[in-house]
Image (cartoon, rainbow, N blue to C red; front, top):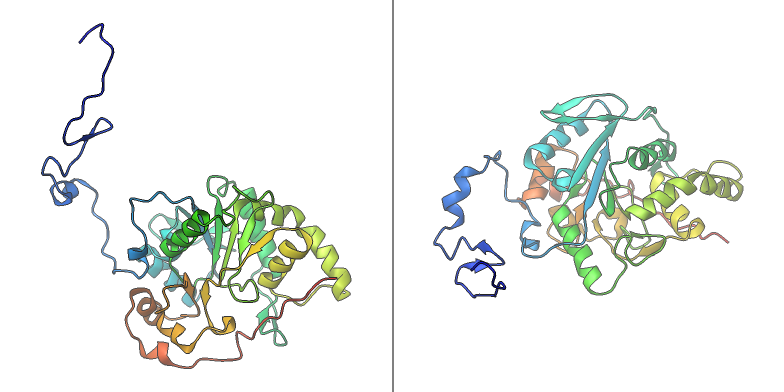
Length: 318
């Protein structure tokens, strides 16, 4: 009443001034038709790992780099249609060196750099550090990272489950581990494999990304002295060593990736290990979709090339 102090009155069906739909007998089906229809998508592995009742401390800016031709484009179109991989993150970007419309509302972001690079057989790795230097610079310089506390780099042929990563980051935060930028002055990044980082999946806090980009030239100079010239490393090894050994960014052990180079069992090809947030490689649409949805595929059972993802031994800097 007017002039009287408001008082709290318990009322069934009302929480914090909002009417509870279930208490009124209105279930999800009664109002679902009012929402915009979504394109059909398969039931993806990893969705059951996350409940929407829990607020996650992790927000993900996810990106990939693709050539402007070839099978990677079709993989990305399929992922976009299923809202999987980077398209299940809070924000996503597809980088390339040409502007391409991959789907309605999805156009590549142009990086002015040649995507051609040498394959170093001694490390079974592409020497792509020069390329990804420009990509990481654009991740920071483009301004899209600022609203999110984790950056996730994903290869187009890597089957990635964003919900699993969010759940893992949330669990680590509850257990007191470093979470993004909140507890570490210099940020943190997560190991992909037992030895450190492997390129198909890279997970860095936004602060670690900014430190990486600001210190990239310093790392190049230091490694140039170590290698007596440009080191014949891929971007993953460069970033791992740069962050941990030169720039002082903490690396948390995580073992996120199911892949041959990560000492994963053969069963990783069936994508059945729920402790992993990603699996690699799945280069055809059929094999990728099978991993994504949990269906068996003849291609998944093939042995593949054991030597391609040769183990990268970490170089300890003195």
